[in-house]
Image (cartoon, rainbow, N blue to C red; front, side, top):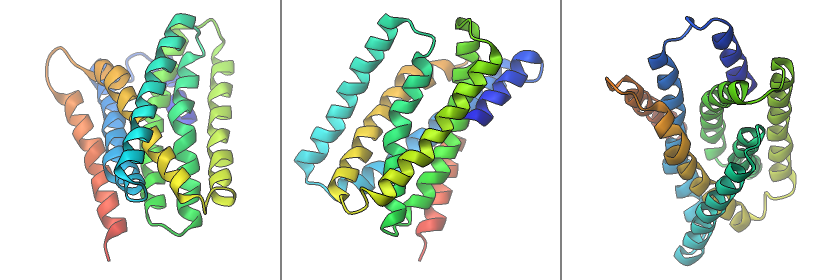
Length: 222
């Protein structure tokens, strides 16, 4: 996230650094990586440890929570809402990541890769939005993004040392986060990446998902 924020800062200082289509491609690439995390790791791994009823309840609860949370942030019209929204799916993912490594599951590696891929464009997009809508100085904004990054290792260590044996709880968190990711993709990422002419940004989503697919296949190979 801080890397994406610094890239966005450089882009704002040098507007010709990236074209509009390049920005849309970056955002769409992150969307593709998000969808691949849901389709290849979070949902399959989470659903395999729960009954269909519990899995649907966890997934549905995540969707409802993120919808209500998004409406609440919209009403607040707070400039920090984007940062909080990023944490809302980042935290359960990081907890699940730590728990996966603790029990020796290979999904931990691919989940770590996909989190990097999704958080870089998320950081890029969120910083640019905040820079335009907030009165905060760029240095303070960048500091906030660095503090967000610290939350990842803290949550991962919590999953590693505390929740490693609570497999059903971690599985529920995976499905809960999956619903939040899908909501984020269709509510924020897809509209931001749509181009009036040409389909290059949409191709970025395909590229992001493809990278997740290749990583998953390589790590899962016998």
